[in-house]
Image (cartoon, rainbow, N blue to C red; front, side, top):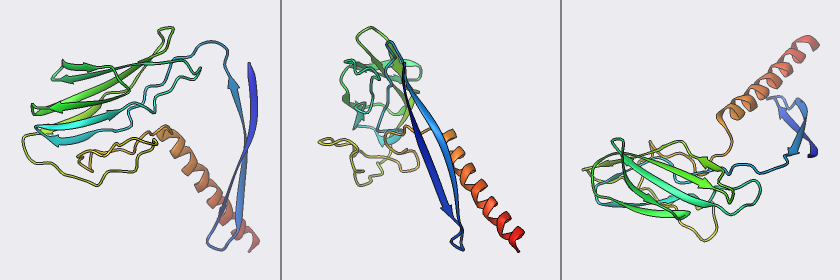
Length: 186
């Protein structure tokens, strides 16, 4: 196994300009052997009206070994599969109201698979809420669709919620150290 070690440094300033710094060494190990691909739906949960055509984008999916991947989209309504599609980007007409789940499975050449959690698409008999298309994270593509902003999540989130909480916890700890230092000094 190959391993690379990186040093990450975080510096924060309190309201008085006093810095606090935290350094952490991170070792990245390149595993030996084939790894399963990671399936990612970049478009996220949405809502639209009956008769809407929505696009689903799986181009952020990747294989850590660089293998070619196949894509399988599964659209389910009330526990029944209503459609499947096989491209990295697919477009679907929703002509029946209801709450759909959308799952993307990607497979590499050796059959290892990565599967997304189900994304929710709510199709209503009422009107649509339109937002301007978001900037596309991929060159040459378009991910702007009718969406309900209360349901939309940022495209292509790779960073986990736990990592975000950890970062905020580290910042809070550094801030607290700065306050304690000022109290000790005087």
